[in-house]
Image (cartoon, rainbow, N blue to C red; front, top):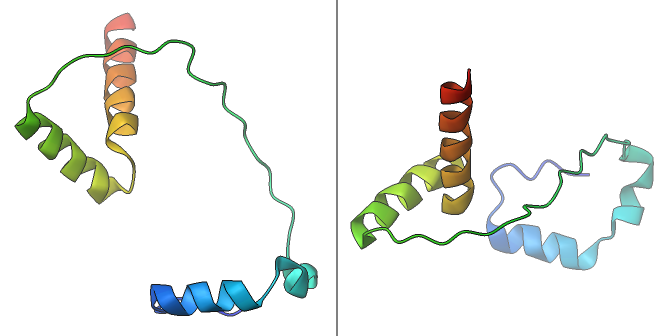
Length: 83
């Protein structure tokens, strides 16, 4: 499999459209996969547009979604007050 570091998105797409993972079967390695349980309940709350923009920007810098970031923050807070 070629090193795609520095490739433009279009180059990656073109490569993936013309190749199959089967072409590189000898180079593939087995990995462990952790399956996390799904979220069991959904809650809804309102935030100001400005707060959502700030949270979204922070999440983007961390490479995650804003709802994932908020779940992480809530979990961290719950763990800190439970201990």
